[in-house]
Length: 229
Image (cartoon, rainbow, N blue to C red; front, side):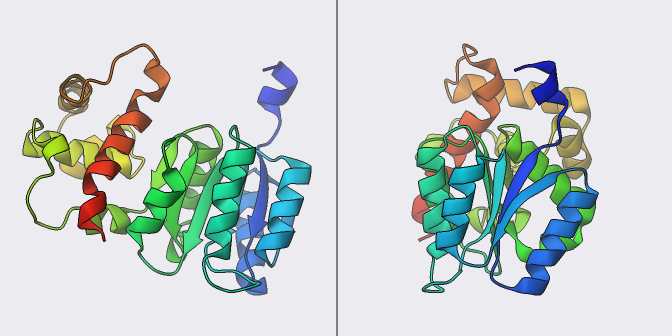
C-alpha cells in the first residue's frame, strides 16, 4: 500500500431505503472523517454502485427494496464474494444472529453486524465501521448476548474456562484488549493471558497472527449457531 492510499480517507458506500436515516448515516460517517462515495435506496442500485466505486467498506440495511425482505443481506453476501478485500457492515432493526452468521460465512475478516440504534452512538459507530474497513469485525453486543443465553456449553468451546469464554464473547463484539478489560473488570495483563489461552485451546496457530482474533471469533460463532436457530 502506498503512502498516498494509506493516508487517504476510508471510502464508504451506504445502502438504506429510509431517506432520513440514510442522510443521517452519511452525515455521521462524513463528520467522522470517512468519504461517502456512493449511496442508494435499494439493494440493486447499492450493489451496482459499490461494484463500480469499490470502496473500503459498504454500510447496508438488511431489509431493502425491491422486495423489502433480506435484499440488503443478499447484496452484502455477494459483495463479499466479488470484492473480498472490502468490508461490509450490515444494519438491522432486529436482533437476528443467524443473519450475522450467514454474512460471515467462512471468512470473519471485514464484517460488521449492528443494530440501527447504534448509529446514534456516533463515536462507537464510526469506530466500528473503520475497524471493519481495515479488516476487523464488529458484532452488536445484543447479538452476542443472544448467543450467550444460558444453555449447555457447545463442544467446540468446552476446553475454555467460563472466563475465557467471556473474553472470547467480548472479542466477538469487536472489543480491543483494553475494552475487554474495562467490560469484564479485569486487568489488561489478565486479558492478554486469557486471549493467549483461547488461541492455544482452540488450536489457532500464530502463522497469520493478524487474523487470529477473527478466526477465534468465527470458531465462537460457529459453535453458537445451533443455539440461535
